[in-house]
Image 1 (cartoon, one colour):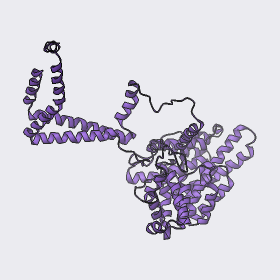
Image 2 (cartoon, rainbow, N blue to C red; image 1 turned 90 degrees about the vertical axis):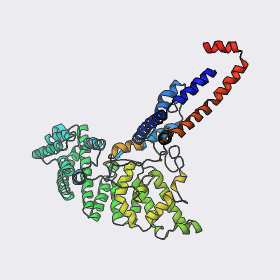
Image 3 (cartoon, helix red, strand yellow; image 1 turned 120 degrees about the horizontal axis):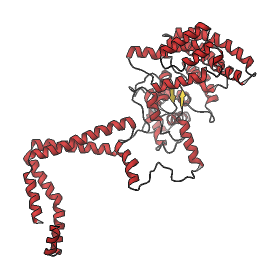
Image 4 (cartoon, rainbow, N blue to C red; image 1 turned 180 degrees about the horizontal axis):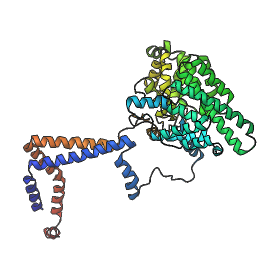
Length: 515
């Protein structure tokens, strides 16, 4: 035993300061590389790589149970309903206020050199166009047959060439639509093409309307022609809105909603709300909300935040946080605060953009309700309306994260239990990363804390780097500290070995050491 101690002491005495520098430096380098990889993996996937590997692979080997696996086959109805709601909440929707690809998105690319739309977003648009603008009987009309292939083309120039080819055969409404959306470089040019599309679309609609009951084929054709006509009229209304003819745009949208009340999938009422807010016609805005802000209808950021804006408008010009803390909230102020709470619970990403704490980008063609993409789409068009109402943004800021009326205090565990809505879906971050361009930093809610392993590796890297620096600067002093640390570390082991030697016979201990 004493020979082992002497050899250990001799080994420690032979170690030079360069060895300690190399040891601590190598440890710092390795932990630094682990830290960089962990941070990159966390920023990209939102979880720790080491933690994920340990949960997915090591826990089953050690006999643990995966918490994500269902342990009870007889799941309660409430849990099943909640699961179904979570799936539906993560459904991607067409942005009702989407921009024109040629006149707006492409112009942004020409100026900045950045692509505002992702491949995933454009692929969803291609699927929408095939659903709305094609049917099984397209092969009967040559121009429609060409356009059916055009909507499936990935190359924009190939789509535009096919549209021109279809127009050489006849006035095709969907060909005019494609050229207005993708080839036009100005809104005025797009409006001119949409007016031509309207003339051709109305002719096809009247013809198919008379024949829709003759067969299922004519019925599908009429359904397609209806979608085309509604799309054209809606885009013409949006052209009028963008060109400053807001009253005309609002009238066109009202007429469209009266003519086709069942086509709620286009969410034309959200276009109408934005136009009425621009006109500052708040009474009509309230009337539209009374119809669409119903418990049986799907909600959106536009519905919730517009309702909050109207209630805030009644009190925001005279609202003061100091006065409210002294006297308490009045009934009108309480209604406004509760409306903002409701809006923030539905989509907690919007306030950052309305308060200009986060920069805006061009909204995508598709949005995820309650996600960052919907927040961008809402704030892009409605920020000006909040600024126009005096004190509204101040009330929003006080209610959103103020010390007294913070919205997040009412929903401390948003992923587990909601207050007015279902729990916040956990799939929004992944879907938003595919919908939004890579140069945009996706807003994440609830804000994720850094995993333990990132903090651990950061601490380990810093500690070993400091040891390497001190050992390089003060080699003799750090050598003394290292020897003292190792001696202290082995002191309990030496004490135990001494006690064992005192109890065991010397001959037996000698035989054990020989083994």
